[in-house]
Image (cartoon, rainbow, N blue to C red; front, side, top):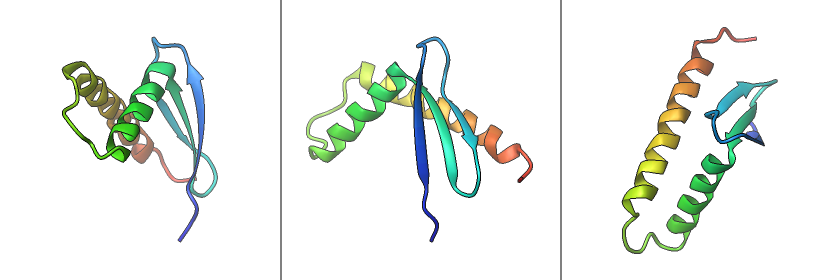
Length: 82
């Protein structure tokens, strides 16, 4: 099994995430600070046992983040392999 390495870069809040594939299974993911905060807070909620419910704002932020990821993943998969 190959190793997946993620390199995260923060960018201004007005630009959605970008995913670029490097050599082998190395990806460069550029996130806004807002997107990174959404990921971290969601991961903490899950690790803490996912007690209670996500707030509506948190759920909406997570849905937007996943939409951004899905859009970038589609772009990545449509590019020819190098």
